[in-house]
Image 1 (tube, rainbow, N blue to C red):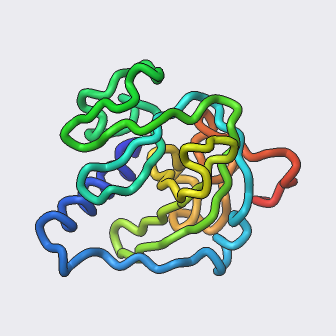
Image 2: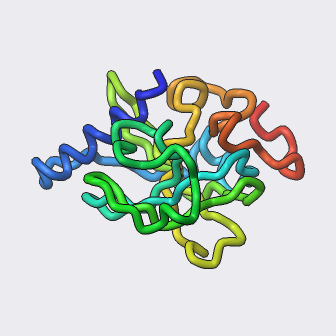
Length: 176
């Protein structure tokens, strides 16, 4: 299941490239339960992550390097400043989010599908002037099997893989 979200992202990019008029429809569910309770929640990054831009749709995304997916072909394991600017067939590395930085969930979009329901979480990286205020797709660090829409309740810890980002204690136990 590690590659589930990567597979969906690959399909989305292929649809955008081949059938521009048939792009999947995502609806904003940020103000609907159970997603509403995750909006404006803060998470502490547990490891260094790349911030990269997809070459096809130009969206900013955040991910851990070669652990990401098929998009990581040519991306070094080591997350380091020297790799900023590296361009592969799929992406361009734009920056690095460091361990201990805080991300905040700002918007959640949902694509209903019988076989592959999918939620896209957009976060803002705090304390990083280069990406200040920009919404970043956090699909590569999601715990996509343990959160809505796959489950009715949030997992423990919620939203992100526990080795990627953990909720701040100051937000309380909002997911229970």
